[in-house]
Length: 174
Length: 455
Image 1: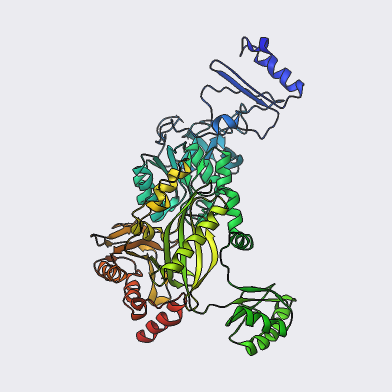
Image 2: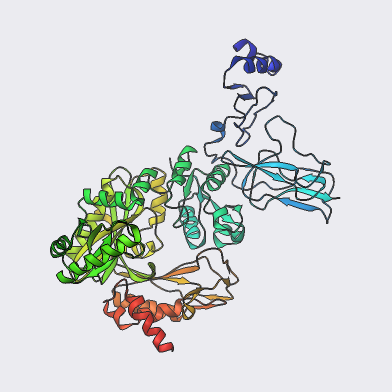
């Protein structure tokens, strides 16, 4: 195993293949600023992105960051909330629909780490389409669009805590 | 480890009280709010507030997973539950513990054990704390007579399977005990299919007394004297005092010892209150229950002890030992608190949420106001209607009553009806001044009188 770690992430594919075939349930590796957590449990997830964490997900072996690493309190982090839009195509039009978080939780743009995001800026969505996940203590709830339109902007970074009522997306209706 | 950043899982005046206590200890604060509480005093004063979810308490203040998630993600290493909401639900400290967050309160197993009435009674009995004298199963009228004679009249005959007052009879003497057995047993059979009864001494005019406790979780417990909370309506306390002036010193010493013994026997950690029924005629007290949290009426104990109980709670949760020994707790004078609710006593205490248009409280020596209100503040309709607690301290009970009367007279609130006027009428009533009241006095004597006068 040590040899394979030597020039990560170059040997990542080989490692993933071996992990998937090995029957090992979880693997946590850190080398310098590179860190990876592999888990065969599809429900294992990030609760918060650890600094320097990386994730790649082959279909066979879902990957998640260790919740233990993120679990202890982080009293050194600044206390103030981090607001502001993250991804947008120009200013939000006045008639855009702002989609808010129904409750506090951690915001995820993809159904699982490494998978494609539910939506991107410019994505066409229709009512009922899933937009993101909101996680509360390992319970994941999908937020769905109530109306059809085009995603104009994504207002929160993946893995960030959002508050109840916080704007997540701006949607321009068809 | 001392707490560096405290999460406050509550609202209203107690959230503000906890923020201030934490700030006095140089601890950062994060207040959880619902959508309806974004602009509250606690949220403004804290370093940060986080919106949990919608106004409905079930989707915000009553969701333990949401709260612990928010505490963890906001980098908190301690959590104070306040009172009410989840403060006595063991799941909250359990979730906290799994996330490495210090819970400001007792161990979850102790919360569970004390929360169950039967197990709490068993713990009290084991610690030598007096319980209401009562019987085992009573199977016949002859049994009822014998047990009644032993317990002392009046007695309450209760259905073992019972509840809601059915199968319940009060007997004032031996004959009534026999007749009562037949009636209660028949009622119990009809209502629950089981005629088994038990008997308990009935205390018609009891006072509610309670002892403020603080434990280190290792068997050390100190008390901060007792409170008398006998002015109640529908089991809700309206006015609280410290000390219980109606209790003689020798009985008071026994009361304190009982409470401390009980808490010490379970290695109680943090703040708690042991509640008792005080039978004034017999000069006896009986254990009711332990409240495993800081209580609404804690300020009266702080006023007579000069000790900040909430700061001590936070220190203990951070692993500190008790900061005082029992002989360093000095109690002096008399304190009274009235809970000011946005309710209309003239309309059967109808809760009256709305916007405060004028808020002009009294200030002065020995006057304390614990409130999150100010001019323009909103009382949302989703939660309890308490707008604050007015507390006074005087050398004697009479001085405290006079000071509270004067403080109420100088307190102007406009925009919503409040119970301030009711409090003034209660504390100036001859029965309250003579201190002859009991837990049913407000409902049986005072309120009917008031209604008759208004008619």
